[in-house]
Image 1 (cartoon, rainbow, N blue to C red):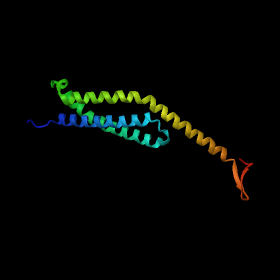
Image 2 (image 1 turned 90 degrees about the vertical axis):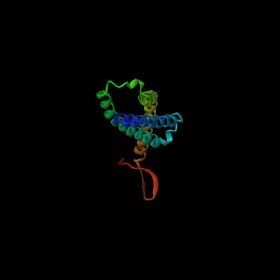
Image 3 (image 1 turned 135 degrees about the vertical axis):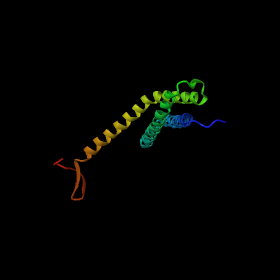
Image 4 (image 1 turned 120 degrees about the vertical axis):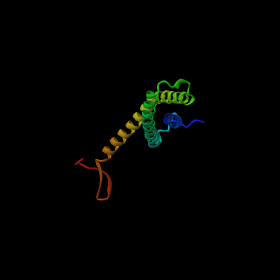
Length: 141
């Protein structure tokens, strides 16, 4: 058995990253499909975690791709880990493409609800309690 090269280590880590990314993205897709917009904070946190995972994978890939470029004579298209990485990467890309329009819709709903809450707050700002009597219109508002 030959010692593992640095490229193989980066490749194994890349496969691990994209596998985790795919699982995380699939969970996000299920959350969006359930249309559970009441818990928008959970969806937003999940998106932030996904972005962090993508950043970590991208950082590892910089090293991996540099090493692959420096070793072009290797038959990468015959390497099982490289092929698995490519398959996972394509699955993540496809899932992202499917989710982007749905995520934009979720964010639009959240923004509309926040705007509506702001309008209600402004409407209530004109009412104050004077002399213990609630609901009197504040003429200065």
